Image (tube, rainbow, N blue to C red; front, side, top):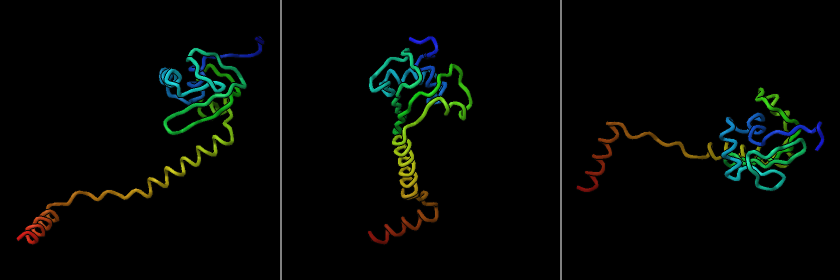
Length: 132
């Protein structure tokens, strides 16, 4: 192993790259099989290095990224995005999923509120008129 090659625990890198809010959540995701390194399941303590390929599933979203840099500290989001490079296909699929969710939200019928006192009385009167 090259002394120039920097390595870091996977759970710590995921936390620093802002894929997960805490290291504990990152650890649970790795243990639960939601993160794969170079196509295989791994443990949270596994060391990662520049050039490794990660598949990260968060909910319905799948990220396929290559590690570009190693950082031991959690930095602002703009700096965290420089730690990895997302594949074109992953980015395209993720944006398509966002658009699909927006369309679904708009197409869902808005629930009407419950009838107020006056409307309930009219409903009761209508039912009584039909029965009687």
